[in-house]
Image 1 (tube, each protein chain N blue to C red):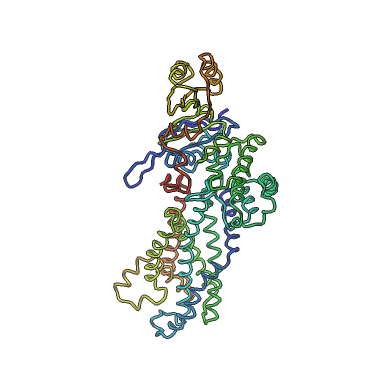
Image 2 (cartoon, rainbow over the protein chains, first blue to last red):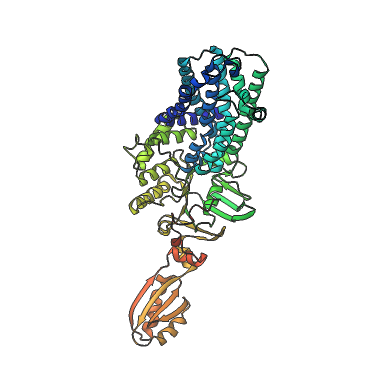
Length: 253
Length: 333
């Protein structure tokens, strides 16, 4: 199928460009590792009950950091498409017979691959700090962040292409991502907060995904939390992928 | 045979409740193998028209056939057959990634047109030769000079050997040497490959030197079309300046009666005549003066430039509007 061929073509090109400047992949990883090293020890001091049933603070913390990695790693990819657009690369591709959707899909695929590599490093560092979780759970966690990354990267590229200005893009993304992140209970359990905060937090889709990932890390694979998490992650991926693809395939972008 | 046939092509943009008619019904016919220039001040609808013809922008009205495919019904068919080199200066650049190697850009472009790897490699090699990029294959695009990068961008538009190539301001921002070098390459495209070239330009001498035919667009419509010579003749005529010995009154009356003379004015003892076909009119004018025993002191024939044509047609000079100046890139909302 030519769409897959085109996607792989764009993927290989973007991968080549990313490997030419591996510094960015490493910089993307420093933040979660710093959290792991400098914030994780604080969590260990909290009473075990407030961390749910996890007992092991890192079983609570690492899924949160994985989502954080996915959230920042993929919402900011739109920056790159603004510079590609400015270089005229997007228009150049759009005038060729290549699938216009593949221009996005190939990039998203590259971001997913990058993210999985970063996530693997993060989990290994977590293990070094004392994380103990089932191997299957680690892979389920990767599945969740892949879904998150597919959706967010698509929407980020589409937004970048519509906004066409880094100055507008950065504050826009920050305004959306930071509240969502805070409401997801990435750093601390939301159960520590007052009732109203827990109520508002229900609007953050990432809350459901993190909860499901934490369940997996505890070895619980079949329950409603898991179903909710999968439904939210898959639904978000499909919705955002669809929104993003509309921008790329429309006639005038 | 026409390779571009556009009828009533129009595009309106809506922004903040205002409707802007960027292009208001453009008719274009370009023959196979022609080199055609598209001239117009910024905001005239030049880029918008080009973007419509290259499937980057959907027209709000009108129809067109480009390289044998229907623009609206079969945009993919159009894309397969055309090459497009975006303008390199302004809001967006010419389409190369600064962090790619020259050879990677050429091979990727081949793959975008679904050319097999071996053949793409062969074509890339040939284009590197033809566009004097030899030895730069393994260089990053960002290390190229302006002229080299522009030649690479043009090479990208040619990888699939399209019968029709659109060049958006191909030489803008280049030094005079690179510019005339690029003119040679563009000329060779047609003479060696029979490629039809549709280019927009700010440089009148470029249109003059390169184009068989010129379209002038203003306020979203085609204001004039023809060969550069035709346009100059039709619109401004040639100008003959002459100075005669003694009072010029008799000479003025005599010349004003000649059918080739469209207009005659006198200033500081010099007569300024606007004539058609100046080089043919000149001998007869001289004979008339000679027969009346009027002695000429000096005579000078000047052909109008495309800039004069432009000024007459649009009330604006193209040169006021040099690229990089204010207003550049505002054509596209």
